Length: 256
Length: 322
Image (cartoon, rainbow over all chains, first blue to last red; front, side):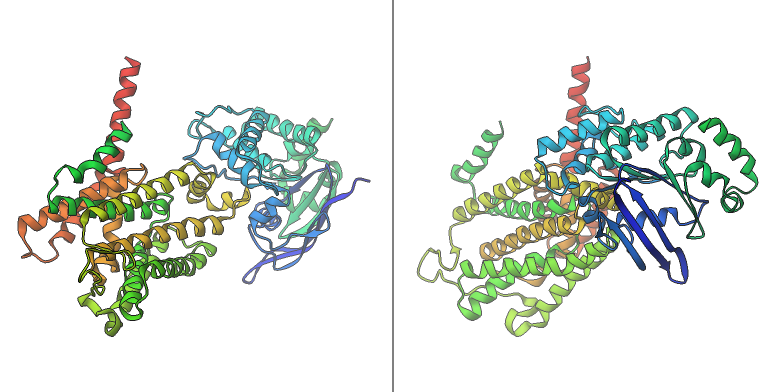
């Protein structure tokens, strides 16, 4: 049994009277790819933002290697080894690609590297996601897939132990989606980075995740292996609804 | 080329320059100092309308210390700098911590510069109120006093202010080359994303704000000691803060010498208007400033120097391509 990297316990976030995340608990093992799924508004992104430090929890705990990180500022969480991407890419448009990623390498690690080292790590990260790493490459030329790769490269350059990937495949076509899924599993396999992947496109996700946590109305309704979760009647009812049959065939096609 | 121009500038007063042109040149460098200080943070997306406050602190703290306590400007200046840094911190910290950016930040700072002016006016028994105040002269029998930081020779002031101007440009260059500048640009575009990659947004913004405030405060000290007269409207308040913003936009805030060009431009404009129309139309210069500001923002958003260097670059590219 690999050791626990992240442990979320009774995590709760209320915005006024609206409870977006309600006593959510799950663990993430080291080296695992965990899928966090659920319909729109189920609390996936809020959970994400709580872990990444963009929001402070109302109650509950988030422990990274037994250290409480709930309520820490985002920059502190980054230093402790959590990298994140945004669902809607947020590049620094006026900077070059290398500068975008080099900032992450320079500021995102616990011990600040030299500038040369940060730029080297930035080029490595860009090459890993197959983006151009020369100085002249700009953000302007990138399409939807390119911007998502940039998000990934920026998060990776902080040398995280845990990568939070937020619906990273939205807006991509089938082929790009599969490439991205392979890229994430490649990152885990080669770099040993643990990944939490928020996604609503089930097919691509099912192929690479080890385990799924399903949220609905801010609560965990199921968790387990992808096939188990996909056959869970509660999941089929609240998340998949009338598309259940479509999903079943999707999974059959993907997982064989 | 660069050094030749600098040598020419340094030698200019020795080549038999009249008193009035020399005075204009000194003022131009002095304002260039202040505008450069403003731009150090202004070009990174933090537009402040409050820099009149820092300039006012520099000018008044030193003069008040000298007049009321006989405190040498050599002691008054560190006190003024410390006060300016403290004010920058008090205004900056809550703004940056709670993500008050853009127009809202500009409004907060606008209030700061006006509050400073009002405080100076309200303490009229000490500060002379809106009539202004003159530092007690130390030049009754001598032509200079190092202790009082008073020099009757304009030439001395020219070299002192030239040195500070060069210092300001040096700081600009250091900031420009730093990773902090990249990080602040990133913050000005996507603040949350910048925080998510480990950038301490509050700390970096505070750092550059305090740096800019210190430089501006120093400009205020030099202004008071050179002019030997300060007035709340000429060193503080909304008017002077707006003038800084206008000058920098006119000159170009994204190139190192832009603020300097802006200083020359605003100074010549003000002097030109004064010579042309005399003092009969009160507030004419402000009206013209306002109108030109609008025109600059629409037609030349990168300022005179920014637009000029952009055009040169284009020509070079065309030539290289041909």
